[in-house]
Image (cartoon, one colour):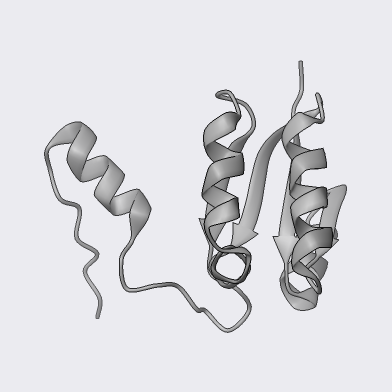
Length: 110
């Protein structure tokens, strides 16, 4: 089976993913509408990967984590920076790798 990609975020982020071929998309404007769309994406049989911006996750609040914990292994949900590059100080993916593998990955800049 070939899985599809979905994206939830601001207009510019969603537009960029649409141009790259993402067929399932939602522009966040309202918490309840976004939660409904997230639920739809989580239960849609064709979607294997959901990108959602950090800013949207923060605006949704604890309800996001509750919905994600109830799902199975697919679709995978990844939080990404938005068009401004915003991401929280704490990198959850980096912490997950550190807990799982026991090694901290550091990005070298410059």
